[in-house]
Image (cartoon, rainbow, N blue to C red; front, side):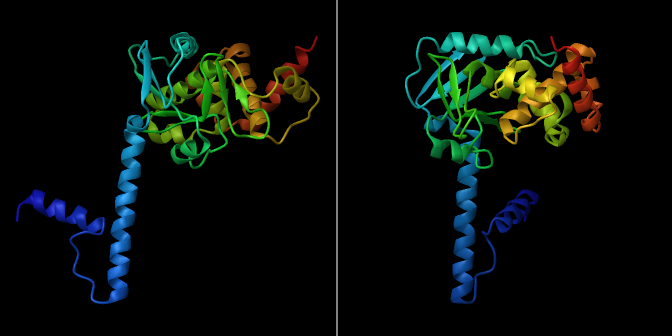
Length: 264
């Protein structure tokens, strides 16, 4: 038996195929269930890697392709231009990089592609870098989430935010990128997007008064302010920001202090 055949049989065995026949009815049911689950998992992985089969329309501009299940408006190219311009502000920007953005437009479809973040505006999958948006109106430059409040942002800002997640993984590596604290990974992406879903004036006032909101939207706003403070006030590079990953409490305190000092 060749080496390639041995490897093939080993892989088949891992996935529930080419094993010794089950000797009992219960064993046969378990074996068939295992194989069915394996097939479903493989189909799901294939869909995550090649979701284009579910999106009938697309527009490409400056290396970014937006896919949708409904016709895209003429304004789509302008929205892509705006997202590319925002992402290009990052020192992590990679010339010639391509991006794929899939606008689900349906909460159940988005839940398939983002099972752990179904109330988010979007998600960016590691390895493939495929970006999935919950819902968007490119004509009005609006992205929406299913969260009960603070559920609207600009499409261009959300797209730039998710593109930036891919840029971070490209810069620091997949595993390190996944392990970065949220205040850096999400805060930097919102810093580049130049927006958060939480109202700017309300969030700034709350931080200056030592108050916080329990919503994820507020936390993203706080994370953006922390990164903004390090980059704009302390003039740190992205790598220097990452080097302070373990100093969450200190960075937060310094950020609040800076906001108070800048109060009119």
